[in-house]
Image (cartoon, rainbow, N blue to C red; front, side, top):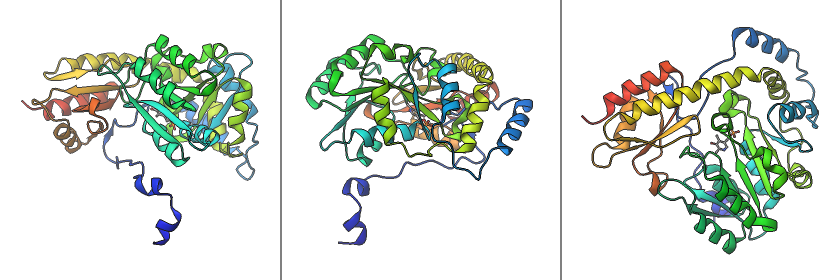
Length: 362
Ligand SMILES: *Cc1c(COP(=O)(O)O)cnc(C)c1O
């Protein structure tokens, strides 16, 4: 056996690394980033704040002030705290590590966010995916059967879901949370909450086994890498034990504290993007052979009519027009011939629409 075979776990060797395509020179509509920047005056003030940060020191690991601002400003219920992560990706890792008893299972509907399955495998957990219905709603009987059979330690429900964009039925989600009961946590992943304007966060006191997870990435701060999650205090304290002590760096901490003092600016940008989402959805739905799925996120999932357009060909043609979106057609059978596009500024959306028009079969 070679060195790599001797030391690297077979499930890790079998994985391929998370692929991020090069995007320089492209209109970048593949990763649900917010296209708007902070106003110039705020940028200048932020620059000063960052210059004053004590980069020679480790962060103070309680992160008390940042947590206080998140709890107060982002709707965390009274008596509930948050655990911070280097993006919600790190929170997912922390959940996996904390729950990785031998034989433990992670459950999620598919198609869904790929990191749930990857993180489970990294931590040695079994991953079970349950297909959504063709209209991307939860298959409740199948989910309940899987909960009963596998007793998953963690069930993920993205609200709204990525890459489909829809909100699952809240009553279905509650049924799953109650079915998991004492045998598993249900993580409601609200990465797109600013665009959905609905949340399970206020319902934390109702469910002892619910974790609500969010990120500032889709809100306009993807580069600083900051996620947060909340749950009943005793449960949250267990997850905090596996958090690396200085996981949020001082620059992220300072930038987030500053931006949270001006969260109205980000809220306005989210409102603009919600309005643009409706306009873009109408424009796309008017194209022949193009179907747009209902979205509560800052992206749209588009299905191209089989036999008329090919998602692979359209994706390639968009690339030639210097527009980068995400070709999700091969991710899951339910996404056959589908593309996912981030909602952006009116200007970038127009560039995308023009390029799409030129790329669709006549
Ligand atoms: C983008 C996304 C995340 C990851 O967020 P980061 O905080 O940037 O790591 C988590 N969950 C879902 C469903 C996402 O789409």
